[in-house]
Length: 343
Ligand code: FDP
Image (cartoon, rainbow, N blue to C red; front, side, top):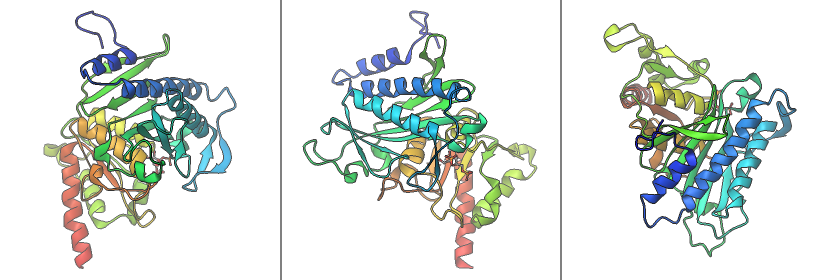
């Protein structure tokens, strides 16, 4: 995207500084933090792109806090992001999918707390399918002189000051919001800079793609089964049947949903009674972005962003995407899950 006044491209760094200058009282710390994440993203992107020729594919031989096997690239991404955040001493604490408890950084007086999913969609790493990094930024809750604890980090998604993701796909892009719309940047590898590609992305109000792991159909609640059948019915007036698309990397599935509209679902099921995806570093940040783009994200009943967390690694079901699609699935859940309870 080209700056209309100067007729030249805008880099992530310039964009962040311009945005900061609109707020005369801003300290520049949040801007620095976003730039640090941008730098780590470039390093991770470089490593992802040459993963097949270096010895970084495959498993590390350990399991993470969720019992999932850890890939070498998961650990590389985790390390890069945490060391980038440690550099500018603005962040006091990181909570990451790859670490059991909180990770205290060198400046325990820093005012920001960052949640990270360093490499989302890890099962796709070794097969060259899109993966991503997700971040969510909060102000610490307690005073800067108090001992840091998990309690500082347990805040609802409504309190996020910024959130975003980096998608390592056919190109590498970074999307983020500070609560004033969603901006997207594409990495130009020839100059090593993220270039602004859209500064106010809006999700279509309705879309014709549904995205869910249908292999789990038999372990879903009745309402979701009925909704998916509704998506498959032929009805040209409402553009049905919808298309089914499921990459299996949440960032990639949600990014497609942001651009083309539709719905991404990871429900509760008999296998995952509380859903599989993590509230604090997967669902909250992506819900913040999708809401900022004009979409909706619910856990089946209420807004994801309104959930009061009781643990840093907690899970939640999620139904996220275009407003009309999310409202439609909600109707089905209310009608049929309710009937099942009363049967
Ligand atoms: P993965 O296990 O590969 O890390 O975060 C978990 C996640 O990927 C999401 O990115 C993805 O949407 C989901 O799990 C895929 O789960 P299923 O294999 O159960 O569909």
